[in-house]
Length: 343
Image 1 (cartoon, one colour):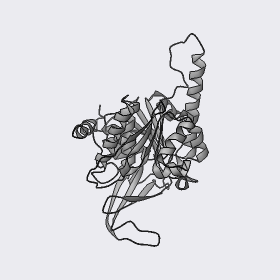
Image 2 (spheres, one colour; image 1 turned 45 degrees about the vertical axis):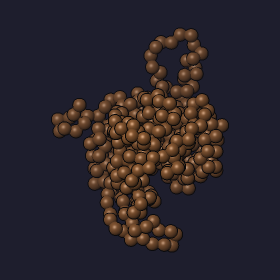
Image 3 (cartoon, helix red, strand yellow; image 1 turned 180 degrees about the vertical axis):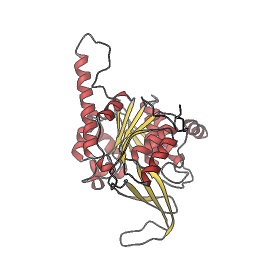
Image 4 (cartoon, helix red, strand yellow; image 1 turned 90 degrees about the vertical axis):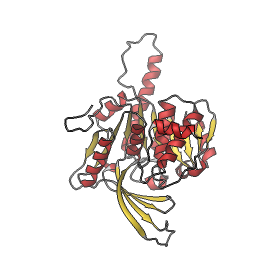
């Protein structure tokens, strides 16, 4: 359904609500990624849109899921571009709030080499200033899946942990009664997907704190982390990280390793090694977010087996890498299936 101006209307009950970062990407194509005290030359400068929460929502929307984003932007041209992109993708952006006139929209400086590898530096005030409202929480309760990342400010992640814990306590209490009214509990909360997203040193004083991540593990339905971020938090490599997360109460997890694929932990405590796909790489920016979107779509929402869901996620990430920018190559579900059928 569209408004009179042709833009998509906000969906009242999206399947997925992604909470956290919606930012501007300032992309610099370099001759090389510099070493410490080294240098490089900028061959091209472009501006795009990004942010882990917005990227995952965009990936799920492209796969056919109804999505919404809860975030905060500034009151500037960058915010206009971010909101326009979300709406063009059919994503509910009603809960993306504008900040004060002097509040800068958060951004990522993305340095990319000719092979598509990149470095990312974050800045800006809007996302660290995000806080959840009662309306945000109500929207989350009505969703089928909630997503956030460690780039969300700690008060936001803490609030999500509290909501998930209250739902778990309510469920335990209701299970002890022989009768039920049949109505949905006000403490209900959907399965929660959490992406560690960055190493702890990058998150300090602006995003989710290690203690909050500890509290989140028992109520997290899918914990996702890259190899570097997992090592910074758990102090071990990918295979050991999966085992550590299982011991700490995580039911499902994915540790991604870039070109080396990923490890999955399923709800039965079994681990699965997922290979990556070899494709012509234009840009690896957003590959992890595309993987997470594919995994949530196929595993938590699609009820596929862990191996099949992991393969779908790896294909989603690979296809996104074939075009520039974080959302440049996001595939539809049919495109992912066609890609997999050929392999």
